[in-house]
Length: 343
Image (cartoon, rainbow, N blue to C red; front, side):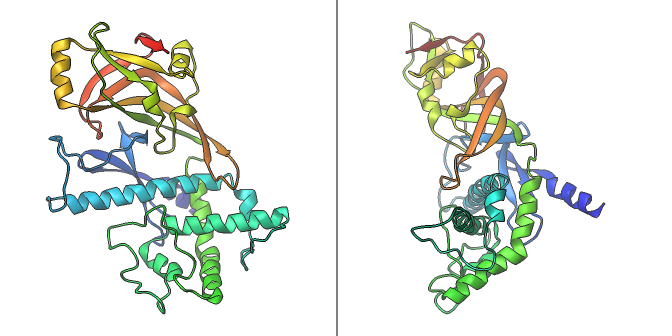
């Protein structure tokens, strides 16, 4: 009974509103880890392009020295760390065989000729280091990744309210750590913290299906007087964002297949010339939002460590906004009736 309650608590998701958009917060199983704060739209997860936070409601950007700048900067730091950590946790369910082969007592050294189990163990240890960097709070990070004999542990880590950057992978034991310090830090994490991380990962969307919205950013290009509107070219959709890529779309009908034409396609947003002139003076880029259902399909391979995802459209309606916080709705288009041209 207690275990069930614990799992339910881990699955508890709090919707927290911070200014422009709400966020979905996944509380960790232990105070040793950071909470995960992910962006949402209409109460569901936001994939693809993310709110950059620094754009104000009047169209200007927060600058250093502005009221609220540091709060916004901290929020952005937390979101970047959260997105990275969330994906690392989702990957874990597809790495069980690898982690089961991991030597939890000693490092598996890389060498020219390695058995399959040795390769799995070595790779798992590298991924464990990534997990520890992504998930540990400041106190645990200092404990595991700082060598007080060689560095100032206060200044070596982000200030309170800020989070470790996803690409900043610190080594076990910290700078200049001996082989004894490195191994001690590794075994400490594996013995004391790794089991909780595995349990946390298992509670996140265990059916491998996520619902939410996929957001793409496009530049407003030249107005087409003959067509009476603006064309949105799908080649602009291909920049990878949080969790999803446009290439992951699984089309369900002919209209959706047109969107994935190998030579590219364009969608027309009808707009009268007088309205378009005013609109183009105010906006250089806009945001297209698709309601989607996402499937997690494993990893490309252990070495690439790339999560495979696909998504299908849950609605034919594309909603268009003029701001990255998705608060200023411009129009809607129905994929079944919108004019789509292919090259």
